[in-house]
Image (tube, rainbow, N blue to C red; front, top):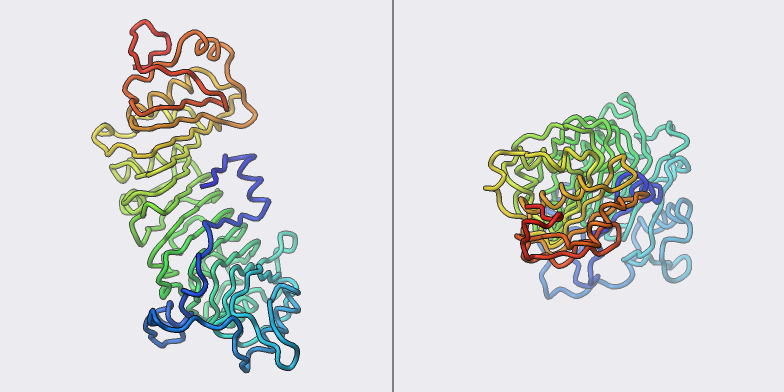
Length: 430
């Protein structure tokens, strides 16, 4: 997992587009058609394709929708659509490796086809509003028609960026369209009313594969609407930079698997999390987790257990007291963290990493993750207190009780450690 430190590091990624991805499918030939992986498309139940069925051809056969599909993408995503042959025998390649980008402020309603080429497979479809022109005329009608046109198109990743609606624009809601999305839904820099509207009009309930969901940079007070998408399995979840969020009220439809990743960062402090939602996040074991420390405490307290992490846990410390918090009297009864590596980001306002922060990290690890192998303390635009560096130079840090610990790194420098308890060691944190 690519870890993003809040503030400068995360904002840099946000400006770059918030496009997150955990890889594409390894083999295109083994993938079945949209009808076979979507339980219900346009009201028709469709069974899984037999495993011995022939691999689909590289090009799609021409249909009544071919020319309109080509015309639309050539006008609004010029050069990105891969085709073969010449007019009037032109064919569209079934799989499209290029990102198809549609900018709503440029699209004329009359140019949107009633239906795009069925069985077309898009590796990535990006639909963007305008960061400068928030009010796009007829934006709801444009989006409704585009969504309807996509109802028989395979989409690996759908990115929705800089789309703004107000409450009046989103009403009335007149459709509920199943989409053949099977990899990732990425929504960034969007308005709360648009998020609510999109979740109302799109049905992802027929998708059989786990879907990655990213909601980054949205002014919504609630994310409960994500449940309306009907997603049956989440592969990865990223909820970040929702500064108006009052409750983390999205309940995961499935327990985490050890191939899944979770990121919850830059939410308001003391956010509400119900026990039901907390347990949905803490059930199972995630591969990697990145989370603000205060949110980690809230979720673990509500769930009465730690969030399971298999490989790497990243905790962003904005306030030192969050790291020092005794989040539950029964904390020592909770399951031990399995994470092999833990990264602590010093996001406090301090410009120098001092001993209280370092001591709190070691104490937290002793209580919560005594089996950890690697500990890293890092930050941005901060330095290590010279007195702390001098102490490490004289005496290794006593890590008795952390029997698996092999590396303790602070701001890129390996700190000497010792497992031999010495009561007179000034670096003894027992």
